[in-house]
Image 1 (tube, rainbow, N blue to C red):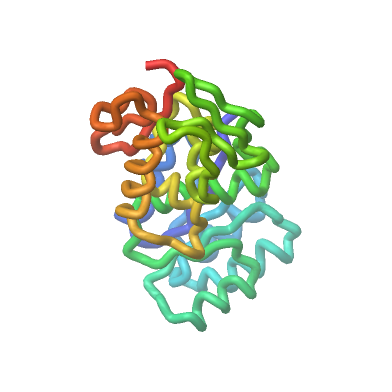
Image 2 (image 1 turned 135 degrees about the vertical axis):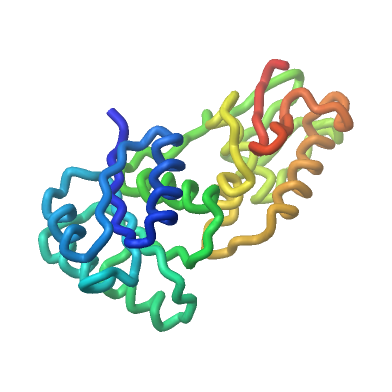
Length: 230
């Protein structure tokens, strides 16, 4: 059964943008557009994650978050706000929010944060097997050793983690934001170019022809996909 997400956001375009993209990602959506409707929505506690705007007609997201926590609602809460100052972020986290995303935001980053919050809440981390073998190459995730085009080498922490994420999500499209969140974490958010540079390095190590990759392939407009067999 799909996870249900509650959205409390008074800006119609933002609310619809978030809802459409979450539905497209496979989630069920319930929504409200003001503080009082948000209180009633959160009181039902029939959802797995809540996305709350800070500025709402009739109240604010900080008070709404505290209200949810007072009700015993323990689901992850992601706050959206046009405020970018540190004090507002700290206030939201102190109220009981789990994450904080300033507007305007990238939809892919929003989806990655939603996935990460749900994964941590459910205890369903994506796991790779202890050893990956494909096309004459292998990677040992316990030691970091790998057999590559350069012979047996020790992968860097980020190279190893990228291969682990690819192995755990074989044949599944992963956006750059997915990879940034999984490997670097949202608190150390580098640029998309960082991912691309690491992908080039992995292709030199694990592709028979790095200029024409068949294992770590680019999906135009979507990201990357790993497949052990072309």
